[in-house]
Amino acid sequence: MSAAVTKGLRVFEGATAVITGGASGIGKALAGDLATRGCEVVLADRQVELGEAAAAAIREAGGKATAAEMDVTDFAGVQALMQETLARTGRLDFVFNNAGIGVGGPLERLGVDDWNLTIDVNLRGVANGVQAAYPMMVEQGFGHIVNTASVAGLVSMVEGVPYATTKHAVVGLTTSLRAEAASKGVRASVLCPGIVRTPILEKGGRFGKNVGDATTEQEREFYEKRRPISAEEFARRSLDGVAKNRAIIVVPSSWRLGWWLNRLSPSLGIYLARKDHESVLKSRS
Image (cartoon, rainbow, N blue to C red; front, side, top):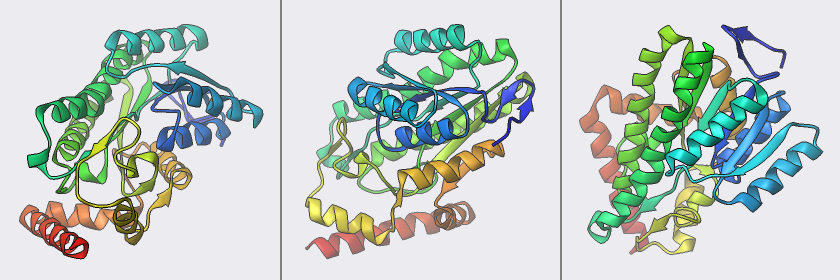
């Protein structure tokens, strides 16, 4: 894709992007696709060895990539990486606050520690990325912050209340930031994945948790019925939306129907979520 410059922002040729959770899943796929579009990428992740391997693969394919160890719950570390990237490359076009975990199961089986973990990673991690990058983008006069939420941030979700809570918050954070940042030349978009084949589908990922009754086979059957797409396909479609500066990017597009129904009638959305849950429980009995 050729360079498209708006107030200094490069989309995507010649740009610089930091991707949190970049070592696996959606983050890794975003980094790979961005690199093929001419963007220099920094893969930030707690899993630094996986990040290094992913960055090496991008470089071998002719792209520009580095990896960095980072915990999104540590603001000082997040800020330091943003500052180092800006100092090294001279610009900070994109920040993808993508790192996240899944914490699921009946709410009565979860505890306050589960809430704290989910909020710290899924919400505070995004807030840290925003607060570290946004002042830098305002000063340089351009930038695009892209936060990963979920379709669960747009509709009701059962057996995942803490997760849905944080994802709704990320949607609100992003749309509010988008309105405020526009006058500063900074963009903000939120990605709302449907079901994507990533490690988070397996008991919430490496750092996540699921205390539900479903067996691994039942979980796999549940997701397969909902036609998950690959992380690579999600990244390609999502980045097309980012390039068009869309506010809320729902991929696959079939999940937009649920979002539309929920906006039309929140009560209907809750009812449909409840009925779907009852159907799932019946199938497990």
